[in-house]
Image (cartoon, rainbow, N blue to C red):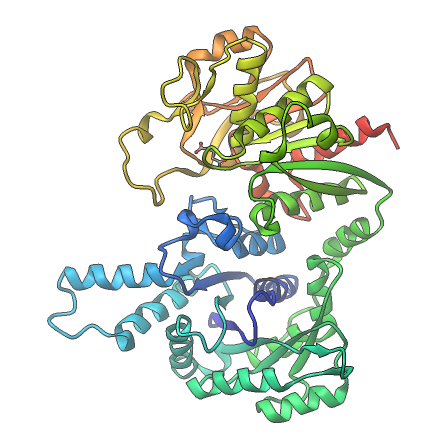
Length: 537
Ligand code: GLN
């Protein structure tokens, strides 16, 4: 079978959840026995989202191979349980960078370099790249942005060309739109969808299937009207009604027969029905929790839910595994002080201090660690959260009042968190952190070892600073145990407090690898510890 290419575009508005629809379809096809991956083409000029403020674009998701990518790649991995890579996220910036570098090398032999064909050729090359590996039967490409935007035009143009260059049964186009409900008129409105499809067709792309995001169910009349005006087969207009969980969407899409339409158009015969047993089991546990806990998520990007997407999702997975509803309360680090820590954190069953960059909110994070440590509240620190746990311990247990990370106090006499050696000579910011998967050796007899139940693990990283080994001995003597180290460099990756009911902090980002079917072990145990604190419900 040839590799099949499915393209998902969006119209009418952004944030309709193209990533979730793409991931849901991928899940259904995977559950029918196909090897599927998803890639995202983002229309902005940044080479990658690594340098984007989380307020702009939500969390930066990191893959095994150290690519800093769009958060939708996190959804792809969580839905499919397979890793993505740098090749799965392409930006306009990356495309132009390649073409312009090639031009400077003289590769275009004096030709005028243009959007069509040079930029579109490079887009097409990358759209087909993963299909050439032989690892996949189906490649789903999510085209970022909204059809009609100047920015995504070259992507849609590349799609248009592929529509004719690929065999007909190897190409499929899905358009996701919004059907707004006008409360005053008590009506669902199809006009924005008609316009959006017209826009797509004016470029020359013909959608095979239209998926309509809607608050209310579509009547057969509305479906027929959209089919007629948008020039698609009756029956190829499907609804995606607001779901109670994103993980329910694959089942909703199956009920709408999305996978059926796709395999028919792509002429893939003889597939069994989707086996979604494990997803359904997960959803049952998620839907009927027997217990609940309150967890504080202390961070600085709290106004935007998407800034901590993978952490939020990890709690959903770990909660379901524990048959427990996890209420995650985001607490603004900047608001926490010694005198209000009790008010803000006192009723929490667990405290997680989040990753982050820069000075803002650091003292609040340190206060939160102190409160958790002194009150025996289960504590979990991630990346910057781990670094602040080390600073807190140095200041308040060892009494080094000036202990700090050199990220904010370059001249402190107690640089307990310091820039990594290889970072010291770097002057550029983009893609220069310690990124991607690194091995970690767990020390026998520690909480970390007990949680993972193994000697060696691998987790993903994204940071410049690290635990300063020069202070390890006094820290360990005073009770902060280093329980995970990088086997090659000796860098401390995990610290814990054996004297505390549950206190663990990690330099890596365990949240990137959590999936509904494989919840991350530290998150699971953290929720368990929070449950215990709440009083063995
Ligand atoms: N700013 C810290 C560092 O660079 C922590 C990074 C993070 O939390 N991802 O090391």
